[in-house]
Length: 304
Image 1 (cartoon, rainbow, N blue to C red):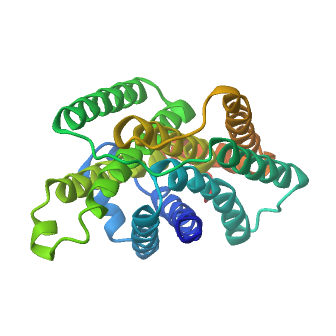
Image 2 (cartoon, helix red, strand yellow):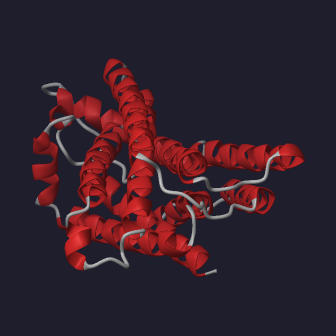
């Protein structure tokens, strides 16, 4: 129960971080995409720094959850970030929460609860060996490269979705490294400071953060958040089972697990089609096009 509570608090902190970071990233110039200048520009925005503070809080809460629970338990609970994000953003920006939104939130909640009850995840009983780390890092890097290459080739909402998936995969692997790191917490501080997994976790987290900022810069929150929120727990669960020997029920239990994942995906899509948010996204796109051409009048950017 401690892991569950901490994971839900981490989801809430991440939701606040997403809203604040999106609000900051919408004002960055379009030509800063995939450049370090984007981060430098955001560093001068207090609201973005507030989002980073919330992200760090979520990171610490997630680490606390992983000390007493496995990846297959903790990471799916982070799906709660999506409905919390939409509700916080709706409250912060004055967007009315419609019955469709509550239906989507209900589908996500039921799907998450159904998946966890059916899977009944149990902590793993092993730590990955060197070969496992090498293979997993190579596969993850390859998938990230494919997502980023496809995102660069695309435009519009597709780029935001692909970068959101890349960020979700990056944060999932960061959680894997975090799980490896928290296993060493009982050791001395000097041993932990010299741990390769600690510094690999920091590097992976920073790369994932860079991908997330570019995703939020490329498109509306309603395009980025579902891709980010669904990719992270799905990939983390797979990592936990394959690398740490975590156990989820199979056989007939696969059917309710798939039903739960389908409800999560359906709820995510339903949230992304929420009409007021789509209108906000359209206004944001019009602002970017208007800002790019001389003499064109831009529309006020949307918070989403």
